[in-house]
Length: 434
Image (cartoon, rainbow, N blue to C red; front, side, top):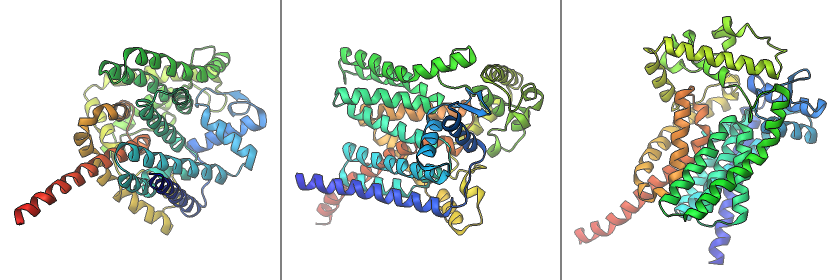
């Protein structure tokens, strides 16, 4: 038994090293000449402002509530330790994403088998839907790691309700919310998950209620100082960050509705709805101004929806479909910034080839894993809520990133079911032929 554990530990290390190597190579080839633009530039600028002026500011010394704090804070810390070169931040993302692959390995090992865990770890290490996001400074890699870690810890918590796992669950839940505002949805999802487990007698009601209160409370304790900061600068209650108005107005407007279905995603309100966005300054909008802007944007987007109800079904259907387009194309993604490089062309081929088999296996995995639905209930809920968010806001492959590890887990369930079926058939075929 000790020898087997030692071998499995070596496999885990091997998965991590392979994943790290793939991501470092990607950053030193495809993303070699990368420098931050768009959202990446905003995250970096806020992080540098934190270090240089101790201000969570985007422009000058004007406090902002438009971005969640955890990722800019990490960028600022890394720039303080290693200098402002974004390569160090991207190498940090390489380590973080390699850790996500390791978590996939551990989860599949615990849930299915060591052999399938090694296969899952290798696939995760080579899967473009994970490593392409280490080549820029968006928050995808961090959020995906935190969500995967939270899911795996809660899977373990379902079997071993130790104090350490409870504290870690609450901390991960809080950091998830501080990375993206929609991370707050996980707190509600967690409570729903726990209460269903209580009703199904997987947990006794006393334990279920205790967890439903304690874990979100730990998360809220982490979030509370930032919520207080937001109130002080904006005079409004804002748990993490604003920005939902910008997302909605950029998704629901005439310009987007006139595009082909595969381009019905999002267009910056500065370009798509200038008659609304021009009411606010571009570089001097402080926290109170940002709150007023997002309120107006939400109001205008809802008005547009009500006036275009006949166009809404097609738009929502496009959101749902666009989420599942295999290859991600973004203005700041290195494969789109430097498409003529041989390394970029290779990765683009892999981006188009890898996802579809995983999607098909994951869909079958949903069916064959239903007998163990209590073990995978949280996975089902997160996938469902993520799809719902993308339909309501807008769907692009990047928004699929947080659930890619969950899709890999479900794909392994399909492979496990297939291998068991073949194993049962072999003795029957041998008996028949004999």
